[in-house]
Amino acid sequence: MGKRGSVLSQIQSFDAYAKTLDDFRVKTYYGAILTIISAILICILLWSEYIDYRTPEMKPQLVVDKSRKQRLEININITFPHVPCYLLSVDVMDIAGETQNDLAHDIYKTRLDSDGNEIHVEKTEELGDQAKGINKVLNDTNIAHNETYCGSCYGGELPESGCCNTCEEVREAYIKKGWSFSETDTIEQCLKEGWKEKVSQQSKEGCNVAGSVRVNKVAGNFHLAPGKSFQQNNIHLHDLQPFLNDGVKHDFTHEIHHLSFGPKVQGVVNPLDGIGRSVSQGHYMFQYFVKVVSTQFHYLNKTTIDTNQYSVTQYERDLTGKDTSGHVHTHHGGLPGVFFNYDISPMLIINREERKSFTHFLTGVCAIVGGIFTVAGILDGFIYNAEKTLKRKIELGKHL
Ligand SMILES: *[C@@H]1O[C@H](CO)[C@@H](O)[C@H](O)[C@H]1NC(C)=O
Image (cartoon, rainbow, N blue to C red):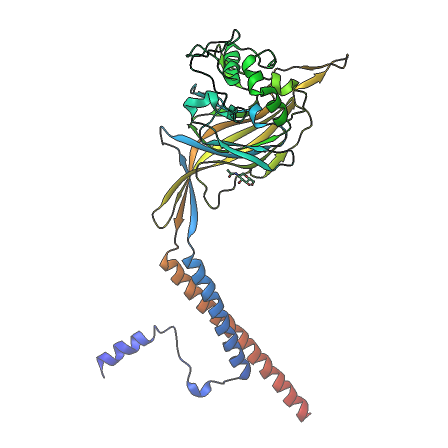
C-alpha cells in the first residue's frame, strides 16, 4: 500500500457520511412505519412540485407605452328597457376632434318589446350612410314615388338632391337646421308613411345596443343619448323634444352586459360587465369614467395578444330641479343619457407567460427528499431513545 494508501486514508477523513457498522444497526417496527410514511409524503410533495414546475406563470411587467398610431376597439352590449331604438343615438367624440355621430359602424340595435324580448334585428348601415341608419326601422314600408316627385322640406336644410321625399329626409333637414322634429301632422310625407302611428307603436319599446366601434387611441367620450344628434356651430346637440314630450315616460335605466376594450382574453375582468342601473325619471345622466390600460399577453407558444384592461368610476346626476311652483325645469345644462368618458393610461402592462427553471425544480426535489428524511430521522431517534428509557425503567421496577 505505502504512500497511495495514506493518500486514500487522508481523503477518507473528508467523508461526511461515515457509516456505522451493520451489526450495530437495529431495525424497529416504528422505523418501518416512519419510512413508509416518509415515502408517501415524498411522493405527494414531489408530484405537487412537478405540477408547479410544469404550470407556466404570468409575470407582469410595467413599462411606458411607446406604441403609436393605434386604434382602440370598444366592444359594447347594453340594454335600455325604456328607450326605443329610434330615439337612441350612439355618438363618439374624442379630443383629436373626431366625431362619429349616430354611429352605425358594426353597431347593432335590437328592438325589444316591453317584456325585453327581441323584436327585429337590424344592422345599421355603414357610417357614410348614417342619415338613413337608425330610422330604417320606421321606414320599412317604402312609399313609391314617381320620378318627378319632389317633396318640400318645409323650410329645413335642403339635402343635396334638393328634395325631401320621405319623412326621414324631412327629419334630417329639420335636424340640420337645428329644429326639433315633433310636429309631424303637418308634413305630408310623414302622414303618408304613417310615421306618427309607427312612432306611437314603438314608443313603449326598449332597445339593445351591441357591437364594436374603432376609435382613435386618445381620450374621448362615447354616449348613448336620446334623439338625433347633430353638429351646429361645432357644438354637439341632441334633439330632445321627442324623448321628453312624446307622452310616454322614457328613462335611461340600463344594463351593461358587456363593455371591453380590445380582444377578449382569459384572465382579464371587465368591471362593468353585468352592471345595471335603474332610474325612474327621464332627465337623468349616468357617467362612467373609464381609465384604459393597455395590456399585452405574451404566451409560451409565441402568440401575443394586445388588449386593454380598465378601471372605472361611476357618477350619476339628476338633471331636474323642482322650483317652488312645482314645474319641472332643467338646470345645470346636462344631457340625459349614458356617457362613457374614456382616458388612456400611459403605462403598458406586459404579461409574460414563463416556465419555471429546471434547476429550481431540482433544488425543490432535493429539499423535499432531504428534509423529510432528516425530520423522520429525528423522530425515529426520539422514539428509540424514549423506548429505551421506558424499558430500562420497567426492568428496574422488576428487580425491586
Ligand atoms: C348582448 O348581451 C345579451 C345578454 O347577455 C346577449 O343575450 C346578447 O346575445 C348579446 N348581444 C351580442 C351581440 O353579443
